[in-house]
Length: 632
Image (tube, rainbow, N blue to C red):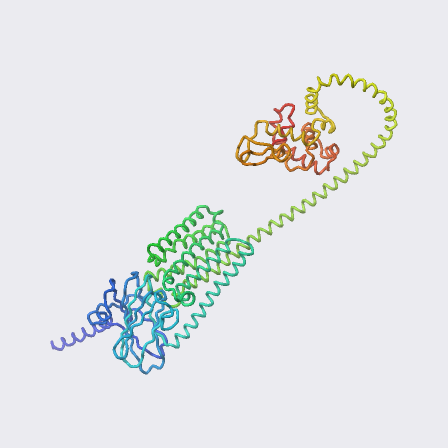
C-alpha cells in the first residue's frame, strides 16, 4: 500500500506544480485571421534591463540570458529610467493557414531608439532601426507609429527581441495587427486627428477675429494657448514629426518641451485676464506672475544644461493647479463666468491626473485608446467650456453696458424734463421783464422832456465846471496816488455798477496783472519741477519755468480757468456775488453784465460753491475778501 500512496502523492505534487511552471513560462501569441488585433501585455512581454548598455544581441538570445528576462508586472511596461537600455522580447507562433498579412506596431511615438531583431525562416535575424531619433523618411512604413512587417510562412514559434532606450518615460505598447486592420485603424485615427486639430484651428481663428475686433487680451492669450496645446499634441502623437519636421530628429526631441512651456504660460495669462485676477485677487495675481517666471527659468535651465529634465512633465501640475485654484477662488467670490472655467479645468485636471497615474505605473487605468488619448479628449472639453466662459463674460459685460445705457436714457429724460421746466420759467421771466421794460419806457418818455430842460442848465454848469477843472488839475498830482487806493477800497466795500468797477479793471491786461500779483504773491514755484526761476511766457502775464520749460498761464489754477466770460465781467460777477453774500440772482447778473442768464447761472453756481467751501477763510478776510475766491 505504501508504494501506491507514494505514487498518488507524487502525482498530486506534479499536478500542483504544473500551474506554477505555466506561470513562469512566457505566453506565446498565435497569429489568427479572426483576431485582427492583439495587444501584448503582462506575461506576453518579458523585460531585461541593460543599465550599462553592454550586452550584445548574441548574449541576449543565448540560453545564459534566457532566465534573466522577467515577465512584465504591469499591462504596459515603461522605460522609467531615462536613457537606459532595456531589452524586450515577445513570442509569436506562426500560422501558415492564416491568409492575412500581419505587422507589429509600437504605439508610443516618443520612443527615441528601437533596434528590432526580427527572426527569419532560416533562423537568422534581420535588424531594423526605428524610433523618433531617426529621420522620418527612414521608416519602413510612413506612419506616425513604428511598424514592422512580420513573416508568417510556417507554424514555428519565433522570438522577437527589441532593444529600446529613450530620453522620456515611454510606454512599450506592442500590438500585433493585420495589415487590413492597421489601414482601417490608421485612416480612422488620422480622421479624428483632423477633427481634433481642426477644432483647435476653428477655436483659434474665431478668437483671433474677436481679438482683432475688440482688442481684449484674453482672446489673444486664448488663441496662443489653443495653438500651444495643438503644438504639444502634434509633437507627442507624431503628427508634427510626420508632416512638419520629418528631417529634424534633434528638434523633434525637444519640440514638445517648448509647446508644454508655452501652454502653461499662456494658460496662466489667459486665467489672469479672463477672471480679472489683478483686480479681484491681488495675491493670486502675484502668485501667477511668480509661477510664470519660475516656469520660464526652469525651461531655460533644462534647455541649456539638462534636457532630460524635460521628461518630468508632471511639473505642469503646478501651473495647472494654480489656474484651477484661481478659478475656484474667483467663482466663490461671486464671479459667474468662472463656473465654466472651473468646469473646463476640472476635465483637464482629471485627464492630467489619469495620465500621471498611468505614468506612475497604475496599470489598470491604462485600458486602451480612451485612456491613452484621455488628455486630448479633456483638452477638447476644456476648450469648449473655456469658450463658454468667454461668452459668459461677454454676456455679463453686455448686460452691464445695457444697464448703463438705460441709466443714461433715464438721466436724459430727467434732463429733458428739467430743461422744459427751466424753459417755462425763462418764458415767464421774459414776459415779466417785457412788461417791466414797457412800463419803464413810458417813464423814460415822460422824463425825456425834463432832461431837455436839464440840458440847458447843464450847459451853463459846463462852463462853471471848465473853470473848476483848471483848479482840479492843480490838485490832481497830489490826489493821483490816493485816488486809486480810495477807489479800490470803495469798490471792495460798497455796491458799485459795472462802469465804475471797470475803471479799476478796465481791460484784460489790468485783470491779468492783478491775477499775476495775487497768484504769485508768495513767489513763483513751478508745479512740474518746483523750480523757483522763470521768464515771461508767450501768453500775457504767463510765466515759463527756466528749468523744464513748463508754461503756466495766469488763469490756470484759478476760478477763471476755461471760462468764456470776458475777464473783467467775470471779476465783476465775483465781486457782486461776494458783496451780496451769494443772494444776487442769475437774472440780475445777466441784466447788469449783458450776458446770457444760463451763462451767469453756471459761472455763478461755481463761485457760490467756492464761497461755501471757504466760509471760515472769508470771515477772517479784510477788504479784499472777494479775491480769496479767485485762486483754487
